[in-house]
Image (tube, rainbow, N blue to C red; front, side, top):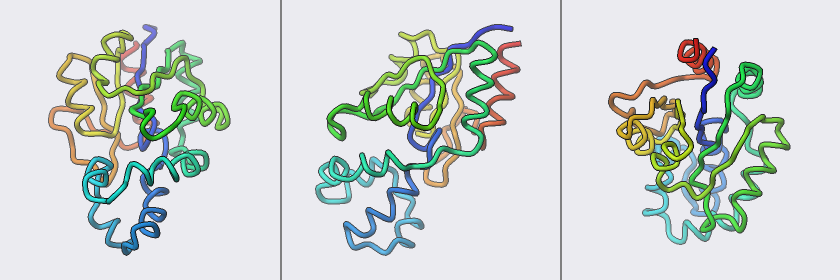
Length: 189
């Protein structure tokens, strides 16, 4: 079995961050929560449309991030990845604009939730560059732009489905972690 370096995003790829953050945004900005759900704003669009959004994130994200749940079967699949000898490298855009110490925030969350991993890279605004630097064999992210960028750099990429992201053309969209595990098994056999 071939051992893979698997690069993985955190927010909305292994966690359900978006839907846990929306109710807080609705309260802060006095926006009807159902309207927020229907509009399906991306994080980038919220940065552009909501006044002082970055300040809001700095004040509220840390509290949300600590309690946001993992997606179904993440622990089970990551345990299998490690049993199979794969390296798990988190590549996240969480940065110093939103967190005083994004590495510590990620590390503490993953450890406290029992997620096995080998490395965390934060401030990853160019995920393709990080994937190439880390010799990533497979990259998984929910963000359309990240998926297109990494895929176009030649790294096999999976886009984790979320209701608020558009499908990245020519990138396989996946719907759960068991599906991802099966793809990793095929790639490594």
